Each structure stands twice: as structure tokens, then as C-alpha cells.
Length: 107
Image 1 (cartoon, helix red, strand yellow):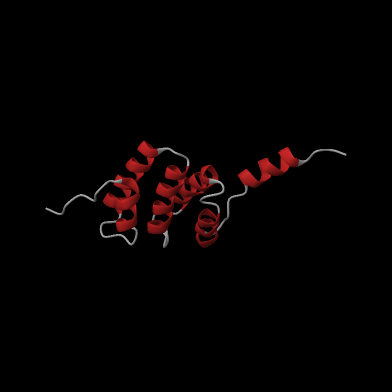
Image 2: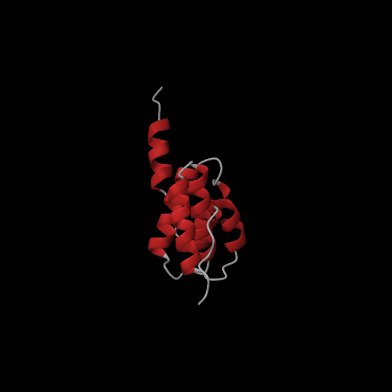
């Protein structure tokens, strides 16, 4: 019997949901179990939907994905990018607690 596990893994890695809701929903679902894949999906979202309706959420989930991989410097950099891209964003308070970073002050 042939082992197709490797091929299935390659197919699942390559299969990125085509609509933004499905992409963010999958990202959220695998955030803890497969944070590397969640990061890949987040970066795909940013590239494919730069003005997407769920960009705020996708960007926040990307910070969590990096944090869950132990990539703390990367998570902090993405948190700073989040604060700049989403002033007063829905996830600002949570990301401030998670990353230890603070949003820039309005001048």
C-alpha cells in the first residue's frame, strides 16, 4: 500500500481558500494547532485582499500566529504594523497585551 500522507500534506499546504471569509475562518481555526500555516494564510490574505473587509482581523490573527510560533520579535513588528494600519482597530487592546507594544499616540 502506498503512503500518500506526504502528497496529502503538500496538497493541503497549497490549498488556500479562495474567498476572504473562508481564509480568515480557517486561519482562526488553526491558529493554535498549526500557527505556521495560519501565518501563511495571513500573509496570503494581505497579498490577495489588501483592502479586504476582514483585514483588521486577519492582521491581528497574523500577530497571534507569529506569537504562537515563538517568533516574538516578528509578532511585535506585526503588532506595530497593525497599530499603524488600523488606528483604533478592534484588536488594539488585545494586541497591546499580547505583544507588550503600544499604539502610537495621535499628535
